[in-house]
Image (cartoon, rainbow, N blue to C red; front, side, top):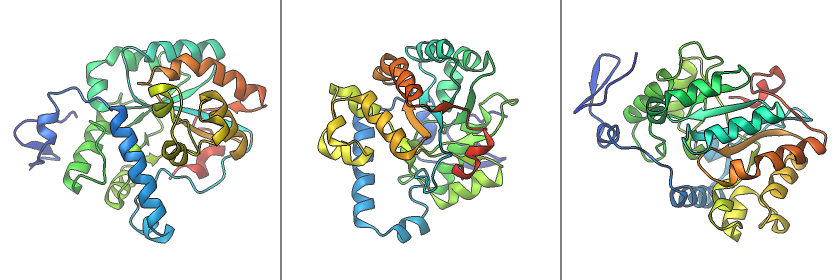
Length: 280
């Protein structure tokens, strides 16, 4: 079932009036780098000024994976697509290197570009996951709007895709959304390594605050591939967060794959059972 967004949005047979969401359906939603930067820095400030216990109790940042990844294994993930400029390029590179990946896609983009979803699924190597309907910040919207974003984002995906996976926009979670996702049998996927591609993509370097928010070492603040590869080495594997919408991602993806393989790591899909403890 696909929900229509009109004057009132219909959710499970009930009229749910959600300010802002209904009007968003008619506009293409783009994730601006300025939004990403602001949210990352807000995330950093909140983590610096709050106790781990308080953040955990409030389910604020479910995408931070506290457990170690399976040693020697790497899973590539791409957010914010499908993207008519970059998705095909990313798929071509993954095909060239025979590397699997998971694409966390935005529902309204799926509706606009079904051919790109077909391309992702074409060879059976890759997985799909939901990234909500319009990519809102769940720290800024009420529970009814969260539920509608989750439901629409999940149900626009092809019905035969499995497993059911979800990633929060900006990594910002809520206890309500966690419970709703788990009630539908959907696993929440975070990351061990933040590529910080959104920051590198702007000018090729990251500033000190961006570096702190993404875990970029001082020696890698001008080296995208070096940052990601060194972070994988530090974690001894893990789930890597990348984005389809930034040009640096397809431009440096092949080099990144080669560097990670040179270090002896193996690329696998998120449904590899050895990654099960990393999913929520």
